[in-house]
Length: 314
Image 1 (cartoon, one colour):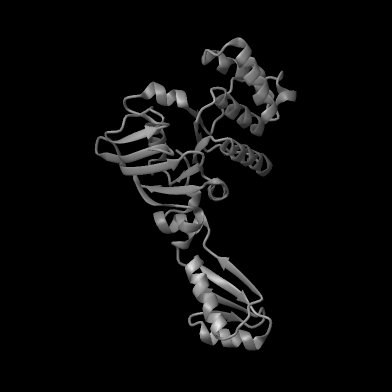
Image 2: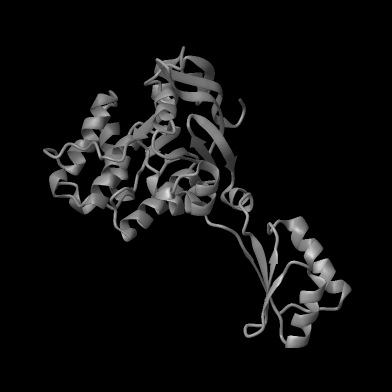
């Protein structure tokens, strides 16, 4: 379990005849962002509920922050923070009062609670709004306050359930920056999201869950290379070299106007090296090379048969 924030094997959960989790294995390294994607009913929420001790699995084992979720629930809960897609702030309290309330609930000494509150208000750029009622906050401010409240207990691992749903693009990118800062400080993030771009931008590793089973796991680039359609685009300086390259590289498609050649390939290091070696053999010089892979929408559709717009953490 060294270096693992989450280590789960063979997780199963069923409700009568309906199997929700069917042998799920997960490994999340400490200090990384792990994204779990899947269509409606895939089992994402159930997975999170098991890992956060809200549900007991029917079979399998999960260790979170070094503690067994089934036998050491208090230790797990003390080590984690959970933030849902709907901010859990109290609208009748100010931003500062919401944070102080969390400190009281965690039985922190008054001085320490005030110190942590002031630090979080500054970190999340909420100091000027600290004395205003949370009901007056914008969606982005409420989401930042909600995450700040989660951090009062200084959790090692945070579960973020659709943290940017409903936010405008600017607020979403601000939240991305905050998440990256948390990870840079050593926090581990377990993310569920309906935005594939978000997983692509943030996650060190991505797992795709479908009908209770993990159907794929890897980095965003690794997943993209699994889907047909990857190719390398070569641009040449003249028509002669383009024509020669088209004859040498079988299966390629050329564009005479753009002086480009589209060559099927996964974009991996080995295939790129082999491609360049072929060009060198014929003394062909490439002015520009770029790798094009399917995006996560293509990956999601290929792996689950569902359009990405169906993704949600529910």
